[in-house]
Length: 291
Image (cartoon, rainbow, N blue to C red; front, side, top):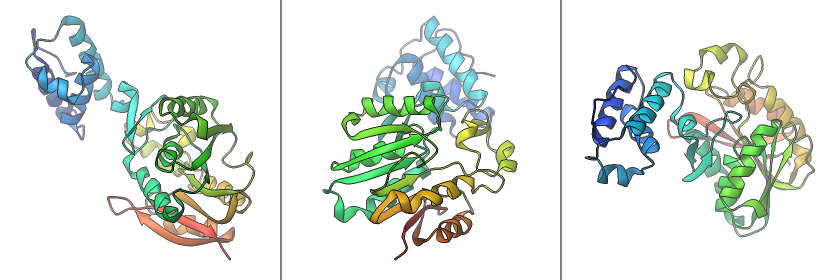
């Protein structure tokens, strides 16, 4: 079943039909997915969906809903179907070249704001290594009005998405984007370096959920044979990139806190803290240059 709709179905009826189909397909959040996809097909936000719940859906609207339902049952993420994803309460355009920003990555934003709290009104320089959609960098610039930043990525297509998000969020005056491998083309003097690097062990790629395995770019997932390849490249440049007293914050995969910490310790960086996400998984490793 792909969300078949009865003739003259109402908006509320379409939502119920999709939620049923999604539940039968084993999707985790059938009601939420149904609301978002029906709303996208009809061009209605949550309030408008409720207000128009009794309205009869027209033929072309029903066809759009069926198409979106079939894509979701095929395990295409909702964010890729609608083309946007909220991160840190900000809307981000999503395209095939970038990861869909995930709630757990907001842990890095929280950690970063915590370490710079006393300097919020100062001019800060931020680098986001492997920026993808620009989510980390732009969320931080949104919060830190005195900051400017640089996002890097090896993918020109990803940088195009990041620039579009930057423009849409009104942050173009404070952000630039550079094509390079993590920090390879950057100079020094950054007060804060953040990164959500690829960290999936190669042998685990085929075991990822279909929403990730089939739709996220492999370049942004593949962490090499042991999952540590990107961390090693970041660690090699970390001391060169950072100003005195600067912090580096990187995202961790599950179970990776100790091996990643060892990589950075070997490069002369001090482990300040590990911050868990809302599920209790160690997610953000906070580092400083060792004295």
